Length: 323
Image 1 (cartoon, rainbow, N blue to C red):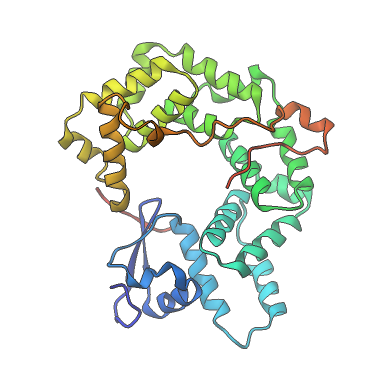
Image 2: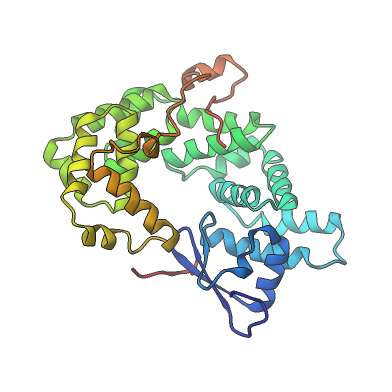
């Protein structure tokens, strides 16, 4: 068990497959902050399936700070604003922290991050997203729509970056491989011109190019590509993934998931088995969660309705784990 009574550090593997070593005292405080997760009852290495390594380090720091019972709420807020959150220069990092706080039900941190982001000026937000790629910008929009109440300043900063023509989007994504394009589709639904640009680029790739790009993916990526291709009715791409997985032996499939977190390895192997039999055994297994386009407006129309970008409701220094 990963208990705090041990003298050695507790080893955690995060969802980015990086390892974080946690000293016993901090581990105890962290588990007191999130008792319902029962991380301290797991056998090491502890799997943090929904938390990135950089986020876990922030959560550990937060758990130590709030354990100080002499710290008033005003002092804690000042520390959060001036030190803890101020050190994050990217809005994506804050959104990752917010999602983790929500998932782990850390209400004080959840509320603190939301307030901090909503207090940012439009200029500050523009600075924080200046180096983000297209997919990250769309993910920020999705998270903001789900978590924030006051999104006007954030969307005003992001709208100019996402109001492009189909030709401009095509130029921006021309170097993306098939997995990059598939990941864009997952978050591009509110932007019709981007969706069309992605579809056109996928369809313009030769069979040989697609085959090469598919052969460079791991099993997790292949399953993602299949799910999206199926939902988007990209039949040739869907068929290519099925054939590639079908031709793999069980031993090869096991090797392809060897670098994933152990709890996910069996899931991917089960999904791969359905791919190998043509997905006829269980249609629900590959139900695509991003295919609902109801209540959405193309991004260019957002200027005429409260200047907000509509989107579907959602719900380092680390060591990398070798396969």
